[in-house]
Length: 399
Image 1: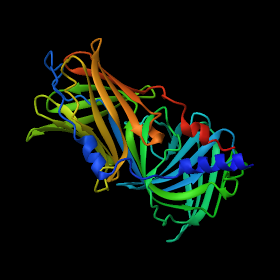
Image 2: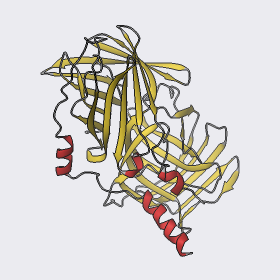
Image 3: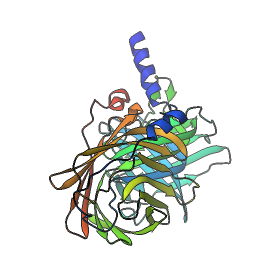
Image 4: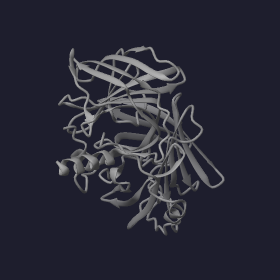
């Protein structure tokens, strides 16, 4: 019995937020790296900047977390996202085992919506009955998930107001095969009552430590880097990216501007903007990449590289390594790691290895950049095998 309690306490602890992975002094030292002395062996393969990572971010004004005892589903999130056209509810269902997430939303253009996110999504009418007050939540959701199951979920409890002392949140192992994720989790409160039905059959809510129902409301920002397959095409002034998603092609147009020794590449939609800042106007070395939501004063996710990466358009010999930090919603030092670049058999290989905190270390990523001709580049980003067994997959078992 004692062993069970110790194990359960450890599992709960792994779900709790922690502090930043670096102090301000440690961050300064981590990012104080000398520039790479790169010896290029040729000119640029293309005129436009090449994007070796995909950044993404999403801030949820309200996020409800429900975990039932259903054997096939691990967790459900019902997230409210602010858009220029009003609030949108996202139904996020994570399956047991893989912990991959599926999104259902009442959006006609859902496949073209945030193409930098590789999560499987489904457009479906979501019925929301909201009887909430200024202080109390009272919500009911009805929808069909991507596996064709009819879901009915309810949630009652106070709005999230409790400010957490530590706000660097754990991903709980979700979407390991698709995303490098860090969280800013400022507020959280447990719910009073919740329920879940699948095809008309009700399942009891799971309980933390066998005592507290796993139902909570919170505010959070998620962000980081994502997998995907895209093709880049353009010139020195503009760039088009074509994302391959579920067999369909989603195009985005980017602007490229050079001034004061920097080159800025930007793509903006009504919901967010993606920005890549390169050092230089001729030799382009990626220094910062960030995603910023339309209604937020700071980036939701910001990656900084030190030193700036070599110009990946130009062949070079050897392997170069940089440090990186990931900041979420203006909070510094949510994650850190190493990124290495090299030319191998005519392709550029970019390997991103997170080192802290523990919940991102199982998510190394690799990008292969292939120059098809002087106007087209293929970028393939995928997760590498985890160096050690996924901690949350062993600890976040519901039973």
